Amino acid sequence: MRAVAARVTRADVTVDGEVVGAIDEPGLLVLLGIHVGDDAAKAVTMARKLHELRLLRDEESCATANAPLLVVSQFTLYGDTKKGRRPSWTQAARPEVAEPLVDAVVAELRGRGATVATGRFGAMMAVSSVNDGPFTVLVEV
Image (tube, rainbow, N blue to C red; front, side, top):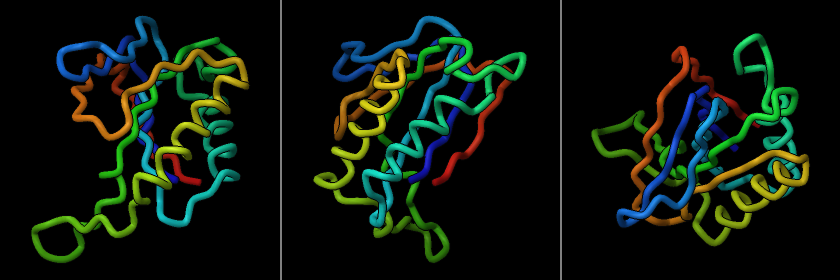
């Protein structure tokens, strides 16, 4: 499981002109990719890491600052560009595997008390954000 976590002052995701998820205060925009070998245990670990990583200002985490997260599924995080000019997606989990694991990460975050907004799995999404810093990290479990 792989995530790109960006510290933001606000972020939103739009589908067909409609905002489907947004955070309007400092928090994390999380682009989340699911690998073919991922399972529910990794979803729990990823949620814990995202919630507790001290990425916000003053070395706060979403857990300590009660900051929101916007989680957006992003299968392209497992695009392999080592050969040729066209990425290979063979390491990205199929939608029927990936969607429940993205949902599991979100459910685990919410179970931990986090405020979580989401995109819409499989949709063509327009994501906008105002990066804070910018401060962006790659998180892998």
